[in-house]
Amino acid sequence: MLTSRLAAALKHYVAPLLRRPSELQVAALCIRMRDGRREVLLITSRGSGRWILPKGWPMAGKTLAEAAAEEAWEEAGVRGRVEASALGGYSARKFGPGGLGRQSKVYVFRLEVARQEDDYPEAGQRKRKWVTPKRAAGMVREAGLRQLLLKL
Image (cartoon, rainbow, N blue to C red):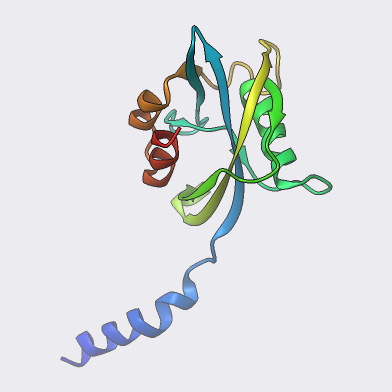
C-alpha cells in the first residue's frame, strides 16, 4: 500500500521535473505545381528512413523562415520563395543517442520551389519524393503534420 502511494506521489510530483521542455524546430513544406496539380516534397530521415519534411533547429542570424529554407536546401536540394509566416505547426518527438526522446514543436513554413538540384549538402544521405498532399499525409507519422497536409 505504501509502495503504491509512494509511486503515485513520485509520478505526480517528480516525473514532471524530469521531463525536458519542448524545443523549437522549423520545417519547410516544399510545394510545386506539376501537370496542373500541387505536389509536396518529402524526404527520408537519416536515422529511421521514415518520410518527413526538411526540418532543423533555428539558426543564429536567420529568421525562422530563413532557417526553414536553409534546411530545404541542405536536406532536399531545393530553393525557392519561403513565406515569412508559419503555415502552422505540429508536435514531434525527437530521439537522440541512447533512445532518450524530447518533445519539439515544429513550425512549418511554405516554400514555393523554384529549382531542384542534384548536388546539395545531404545528397546521397536521404531519398526525396514528390507526391500529392493527400498521399503525403498517408506517408508521414505525425498527426499534426498529416492535418496540415490535408488542408492544402
